Image (cartoon, rainbow, N blue to C red):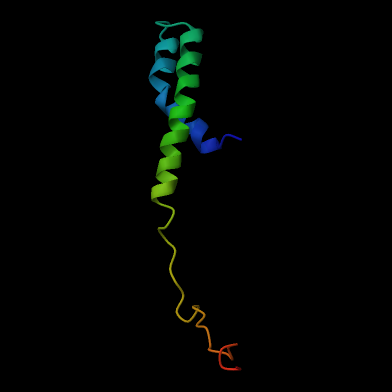
Length: 78
């Protein structure tokens, strides 16, 4: 499913074509084609941004690490 942020960013990318449509310089087919081209580009750019910023804001809480305690091993039994 396409995220709403991707569609909004694709609309922002294709906004100049939409403005030219309002001024009656291009037809609706070209505007839709530019929007359809902008959708995968926006998806790739936003996925890259999510990948880069995925680790930000994560803090490691003190005392959450688990340290293993040594237990009886099978080598000491023989």
